[in-house]
Length: 232
Ligand code: C5P
Image 1 (cartoon, rainbow, N blue to C red):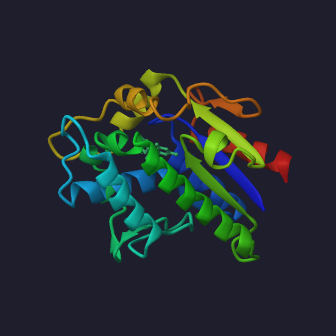
Image 2: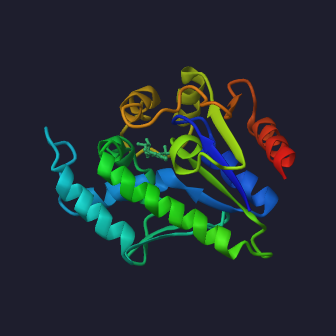
């Protein structure tokens, strides 16, 4: 099975290109950012004040552990339907809200939470590897911040997608993901918060950096297809 690991900062276009790449090859698709977003959303909907001066990390870790190791959470790995389900409710669009984007780093920076998530992400990857089936092709595209370095450092294809901050901010501002009345989120601020727990600014050894500041969607996708083609 081919594992394609794609890391990168906010607003670089990871999700759209990763999904298109998975579709192109008939691979499964895993959006690890959606898992952290779901964890933050679930905290916010279970009375955890993520704006608090100091967070009860143990309580949050226990909650996240219960949600992500039990039957509460599930996520589609079909790139056409990557729905995020909590107790059967589809929260895919809710987790894109600006309020989730601005709080997600508080949860993802808790180290024991990351350990729960990394284990859950590896379980998804292993499940696909075990199926390795004709219908889905034989591969998975996994996108996030620490996939090339921590979750799947032995992936067959490892890419760090980057773009200049002003380009990423402009892309994000053009997306209709904001709550009415709120401005677009500051991608640089989120990158700074995320950098405490993950390292996605420089490509790790063996990871191919692709700067798509001056590439459009199709050109970025072509570049990624080329990298996968070289590995299969
Ligand atoms: O990729 P996306 O912007 O949806 O990720 C949302 C958040 O999830 C990131 O800002 C980061 O806090 C967290 N994340 C992470 N590790 C990953 C993927 C996402 O910490 N592998």
